Length: 305
Image (cartoon, rainbow, N blue to C red):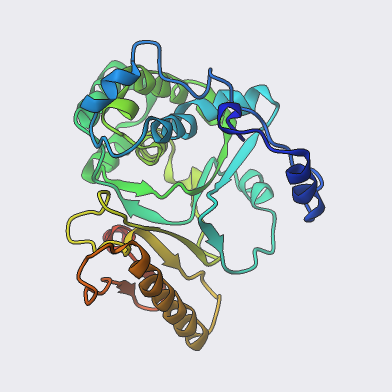
C-alpha cells in the first residue's frame, strides 16, 4: 500500500520489485477515505491528544490496521492478509504455505510474538465493557471471563495473518465500528495491537487462534527520546525482540546471533544518545535460549507459563 499524497512509486521501483522474484506484486493506493481524520476530529485538536509525540500520520496507520484494512481488502477480493513490517525479520526458513495452514486447520488469526500492552489509553476498558454489556450475545461468558483475568495479554501484530471474513461480519464488525466511533485511536493513541488483541480474544475460541513458534522472528523497537519508556536508555530495546523458533539453530548458533545483535544495537545506540551518559548500557531481557529483547514480550511469556 502507499499514500499518494506522500509519494507514488516510480516505474523503476515497480520493475525492481517485480524482478526480485516477485512478479505478482502489486501496490495499492490508499485515498483519503482510508488515510484521513474521522469527520468529527480536526488537526488542531491534536495538541490535546494523549502522547502527542505520535503524529497524526502514525494514528492514521493504527486506524488502517485496526479498522479499515478489512473492508478495503475484502472489496479487492482478498480472503486473507498477512502483515510483516519493514523492520521485522524472519530469521529461519518456513517450509510451508502459511495461508494454506490457516485454511486447512480452520484458524482465523495467527501471530508470532505475545506481548503485554499496558498503554491502552484512558476510557478503553470502560468502552469495551459497555460494548459487551450492549452485545451480550456476541461472545461467551467463558471468553469474557478469560479476557478479564488479564486484559493486557496481547498479540504483537507487526506480524499477523488473518481471515478477513471474520472482521467484516458481526459481531467483529460491530465491535470495530464502535471502536472507530469512539475516536480513541486518535485521542488516546489506542493502538491497532490493542484493537486486534481485544476483538480476537473476546470473540474467537482459543482453537481458532494460532501462535506460530516454528520460525525465528525479530521485531524490536529501539527507543528514541522523547518516546523512551521509564528506565529505558535512549537507543535501547523498548518493545519486542528476537524470538527463536522451535527446532531452529543450535545453542551455539543462537549465542552467536544474539551476541551480534547486542553488539549492533550498542554500536548504533551511540548515534542517538545525543549527550546521554555513554556508559549506560542497554538492559537486555533474556529468556532461556528462546528470546532476547525488551521486557514486554518477556512479561507475557512468563504469564503464559
